[in-house]
Length: 129
Image (cartoon, rainbow, N blue to C red):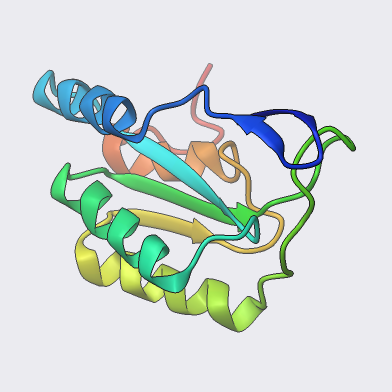
């Protein structure tokens, strides 16, 4: 999403295109990973539906983090997500079949990336030369 001013935003990403990229990557045998930022105005039902959609694509790794407004041109933070809510979404993601879910206020897509990928590559952290 790109914002030129408060409330003046346009989408650059398309949800269906993102799901298609995951679908194609999985079909070619790649480990797939995606992430969501919470606290930008989403509803619980939207999070649930998104997790279900991603699980249907057999996404392997999911990261859930707190949205932080990078500049005044971006949307403001709608709410601060509690640690308990992050824990609930992690539990739900694992129930849906994600192999790995990192979920917390400071989680970003690179959070524990080595540990996440080790589950799928068999290469342990620190074992790379």
